[in-house]
Amino acid sequence: MASQINKKMLWMLLVSLLLSNMQQRYFAARGKQQQVPCLFVFGDSLSDDGNNNNLVTLAKSNYPPYGIDFPKGPTGRFTNGRTIVDFIAEFLGFDNYIPPFATARGWEILKGVNYASGAAGIRIETGQTQGDRISMDRQLKNHQITLLEMNQMWGNHNKSTAEYLSKCIYVVAIGSNDYLNNYFLPQYYPTSTIYTPQQYAVVLNDQLSQQLTSLYKYGARKFAVFGLGAIGSIPIVRSSCGSGTNGSACVDNINNAVELFNVGLKSRVAALNHNLTCGSFVFINSTGIASTSPLLASLVSNVSCCEASSTTGQCVPSGSTCSNRSQYAFYDSIHPTQIVASVFAGRAYKAKSPSDAYPFDITHLAQH
Ligand SMILES: *[C@@H]1O[C@H](CO)[C@@H](O)[C@H](O)[C@H]1NC(C)=O
Ligand SMILES: *[C@@H]1O[C@H](CO)[C@@H](O)[C@H](O)[C@H]1NC(C)=O
Ligand SMILES: *[C@@H]1O[C@H](CO)[C@@H](O)[C@H](O)[C@H]1NC(C)=O
Ligand SMILES: *[C@@H]1O[C@H](CO)[C@@H](O)[C@H](O)[C@H]1NC(C)=O
Ligand SMILES: *[C@@H]1O[C@H](CO)[C@@H](O)[C@H](O)[C@H]1NC(C)=O
Ligand SMILES: CC(=O)N[C@H]1CO[C@H](CO)[C@@H](O)[C@@H]1O
Image 1 (tube, rainbow, N blue to C red):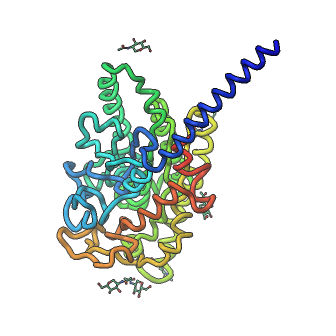
Image 2 (image 1 turned 30 degrees about the vertical axis):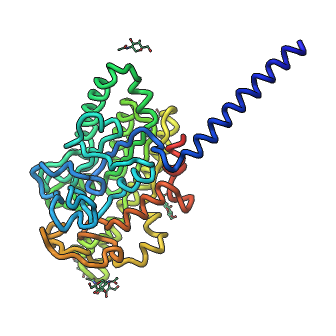
Image 3 (image 1 turned 45 degrees about the horizontal axis):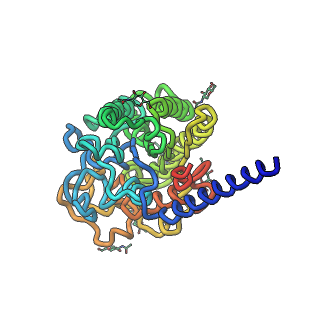
């Protein structure tokens, strides 16, 4: 009896020594190595890195001066440099940015694919006045194509796709166009005559929850879901609302509607964590991050950096830009500059305040 106990204790000691050794090695390697095997991205122009380049649409940005601060120049990113998801990929230790679905081929899909599309929304009709775009539902279909390809690749290697996917991070950042290119364009879309802002937020929250649940069914387990920014305050909306008290009421009206979506989304994230027990869902509080960043508060935010079209809000092809781009919040009249993207991504990855990410940040999501 006594010798049995001693044997057991010896085994336990050996096992715990081995485990702590492995842990030490793991932590020593962290920060340099890629923290998750792949990163999938779903969203709109804030994340698009080239999916719209060959679509018939006004929502394109593969021309100068877009990409002026990006090593490869214009790529279809709607900003001067890197996007929020580019920074997140860097922070997670990826060597390369996540390729767009439109051009991703072969083994590179194993590190993840970006499905985001400018003008796209949660709702299928959103953005149709801009031309073609890849709605969230179509992005989910494209993801299924990627999964088929992954399964084929692994057929020979007999590795479980499901186990692999369960370690990957899925960034979902969509919904701004359901407001700017739908609800608040009553001349083209009927949604504002059908729903109050509160009802519309619930409709969008319901649909996005279903889309996230579909992703979970396809094998996703780690989700970072971004709330929407204060899109009433972007330069094109400010100028279309006009100045004076009516102008600020118009801006507030849009920001208030979007905040209903955000509050609902956060509680959906809590419900999804409860309902889908193998999943981890994180909500990123974009408006909270924007309103509490001293750096962002110091930037010029009422005008665009590039010379922008007053109708589309996008940079005029080969138009001029400001030279001090890190002092401007908006590159064109809609999209944030690289410096703003770095602040959002930095606090989504490693929260500075408990309200930045709920229930925890992307650093913890990667380890979860
Ligand atoms: C706001 O706009 C409405 C109509 O668009 C106008 O009747 C009203 O006088 C305006 N109010 C102010 C304070 O400008
Ligand atoms: C969670 O499950 C409950 C009960 O089945 C359901 O009513 C609710 O819609 C689910 N919530 C989400 C966000 O999926
Ligand atoms: C986002 O953060 C702000 C500022 O910290 C906070 O007031 C707000 O309640 C948060 N929003 C959500 C939906 O958690
Ligand atoms: C932008 O803000 C600055 C300072 O706050 C102001 O001087 C300028 O007139 C504003 N420009 C526009 C176009 O509103
Ligand atoms: C940026 O540079 C322009 C001239 O190129 C100048 O007018 C503007 O005041 C500068 N903005 C800031 C925030 O320094
Ligand atoms: C293609 C192939 O060899 N598939 C096998 C992979 O391993 C599982 C068991 O782990 C088998 O059930 C499959 O037949």
